[in-house]
Length: 234
Image (cartoon, rainbow, N blue to C red; front, side, top):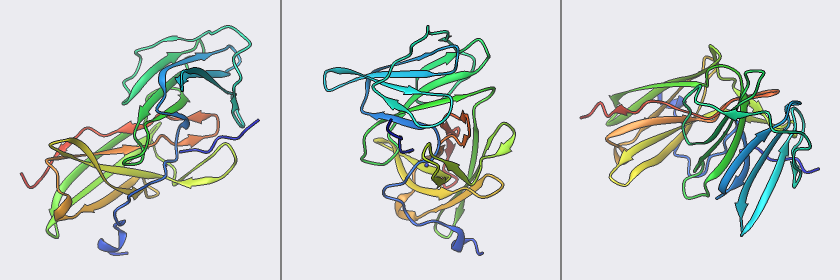
């Protein structure tokens, strides 16, 4: 049994510096650069994630609680079905079980220049919601936002399967000619809000915020992305 590590005063004083590599708390990262990912769930709530890497099929069993089990597979039948009940970003698979729970695989590049991470989540109801706005400030652009889940602010910290607690962050991206590029990570506050001052050298035509879904015990919420907002500087 191998525990799996989880991947996220004054106004100026509250701004975080540029983050080159940020740690994501939230839904479980099960693999990197995975091909052909698939998801199965049995009646007891055990989830089997499979993917191809290095020319071989790999498996990971995620039980309802506790550490995960690399190499293990479901012993019972798959009771999940494909679902379109909700919209989530970076979706590779979305399944629904008879108890109305949702199960998902998402794939995105959490750290700039890093691998694409395959991430697992399970929850009920609507996914997390992220909203942002921008305004000119100090020669740059102030991006502010708020992240909520189940009608409440995302928690300040999320636990890993090993019991460690990781700080919750929102990752601010800017839109440039080559696509979305990471600017920084901003720690969320108790009310779910966050802010970051984008310097003049990092301005984009639009901005978005990506928030790893919070972990609330057996609930592993999916990762969320705000709707893009245009630069307030035109």
